[in-house]
Length: 89
Image (cartoon, helix red, strand yellow):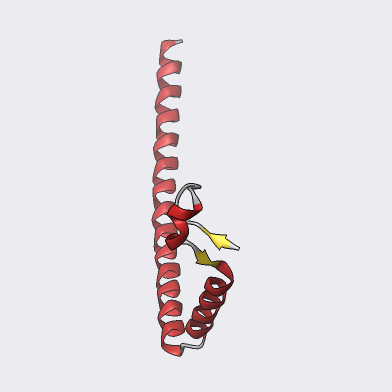
C-alpha cells in the first residue's frame, strides 16, 4: 500500500518518495473533519456560495435581455427580407 510519486522506478531510487496511504488517508480524513467543525470556515464558504448564486441571477437577467434584443433584430431582419422579396416579384 504505497503511493509513489512519478513514474514507476526502481524501488531503491523511489524509497524516499513513498507515502504509506493508510497513514495519509487517516490524516486527510482528520483534516477534513477539523474543517467541517470550523464554524467560521463554514460561514465563509456559505457566504461565497450565496454571492455566486446572486451573480448567476444577474447573468441570467442579462442573458434574457440580450436574447430579447436578438429576437427583435431577427424579426426586423425577416420583415426587411420579406419586403425586399415582395418588391422583387
